[in-house]
Image 1 (cartoon, one colour):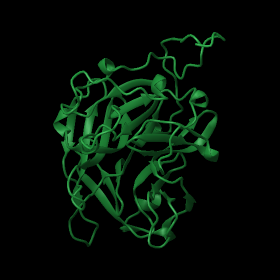
Image 2 (image 1 turned 90 degrees about the vertical axis):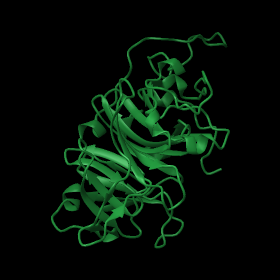
Image 3 (image 1 turned 45 degrees about the vertical axis):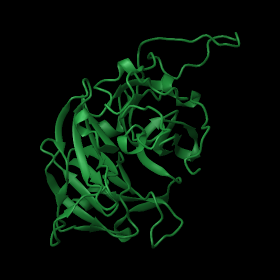
Image 4 (image 1 turned 45 degrees about the horizontal axis):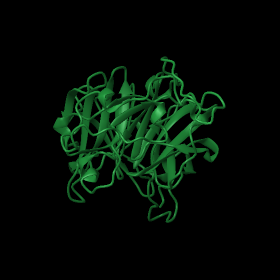
Length: 329
């Protein structure tokens, strides 16, 4: 799980902006030059206006690298991300009618944005049950066991190379897999974006030991199987275990397609990327997937231009501005 759990580093190219007030250099959010539209790897979606620039954001100075999803996945709405070396796995769904938002998994070269593999529909069965299709694909995490894919009612384990399904578990209410993450002590966390029938008004995260999940004969995960549970912030779309700003623990991405907030241990909140969903920590920074520029939302109008994947230097997260929006609005 080193990809998920590694401590965060900084970019290395020095840069500084003058303080308009003349009181010395203004704080920089990273040591890398801010990414421009020309720096984003891969090809911008064809539905974006020609030469469309990236929307300036409060944390634009912290973005050190960015990648567009491959053009062949124009209908794709990204939700989760896992990274190993120079490869990213994007999970999400293809736009469509409610009830048919089938999970899709892309493997992408982070250097070029080139599509390496594509599974347009994830299907499998919980032992003893019928074959079912994964919907929405809310979260992703990668460890030595494979690629974990979460959805509201099931947990999937895929082979990261072939993208074949290895195992499927049923999630029993109130447990949900709206998003997921791995912790350094061998646990997997499954987050509830919305309250459940059992716990109305409460969004939460349930923790399970990976060894328990993988034990022979285990086909379902319920509240009684969890080793811990905690409340999560409202409108949490993704989470990552990381050390940022001197605080180690779970950091949440709270967002909608026009607003993003990063909330860490103790409720510390900072401005973040609009549409932020899944996150993964690497030695070079935190990779964040955004759905703001997905065609399903962009065509509704009024959305910012945000690359599918962005790598942020979080070494100066304490200098990031406080949020100017609230995902609950």
